[in-house]
Image 1: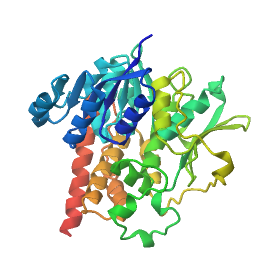
Image 2: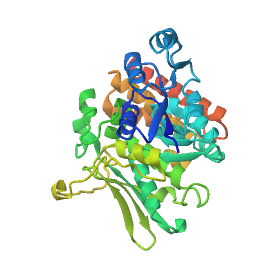
Image 3: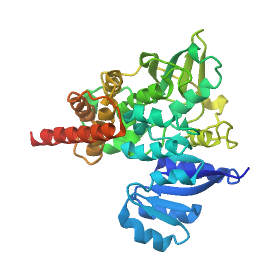
Length: 396
């Protein structure tokens, strides 16, 4: 059997660069046949392509076309809004590391092509859950989560021969850089403070989401989409209220599954995103490079505590959106992207991110997520609503 063909969408981001590391560690096992990016860091993208030498390069920004063709003459160049999604035809496994809702076309194209999707783009599954679930029914389609928590659950469930005996899923959260702080002390935190994650190295958007705990709320919705369906339909029938969050500052226990007899199985490793990426590439096998290996003698201790929902209301907002269902998760995800962008640009206080999301959700129109067009319109409307709220707050 030849090398597994890998396409990397979002190659210049944190997940993309670490995927390239994983492939480099096992070069005889994997071959990167396609790279894709949004276009915000063209020099980094070209440098990657010169090193990796993929067959196809794709970039969302059409203005990069001439430069890519000039500097990467050996590669087939694709540009424009459909370019990244087209990579699904070039690989056995597509790693979707695109940030935010923009990753939805890659998710759907990969599943509709009957390929394995190594999913690090949680927003596409959250915003368009019913649409993605339909795409997962495509013959040959396979979704293996790359988020460390959902990958951990995926691994824990492999030890269970009786899907109906899953009682609870427990997602762990590091607590971010502000764990233990009061709401009053967080009134004027800076972007640099919010980006200083204590255990993980991630891109700016997900790092801010971790600091507000909205990231963990999004992961609760993602876990319900992945594992809440009845056995035989991708999931194990876990109810939303049986997906819980516990703060674990060491980020060594990545998540846990509790069974009806009280037994709990957990997946542990040092925080290193290359491990879940390697897991998704190798599945159902495993990688051979020990990313995240634990020095048990030096580990010391593992701590757990409940999340502070008063100081970090984003987690509760996500549960509320999940209970509402329909397009509410799409509104949550869209409003959060707008608010985080505003914070990173210095136009919104960190403490007001959750407030913008909450105010946007208050205007949710109640529409069900019946089709891709409905989801796209929900995303557009929620973004417009969140931006109007931001403009209104600045006007005051």
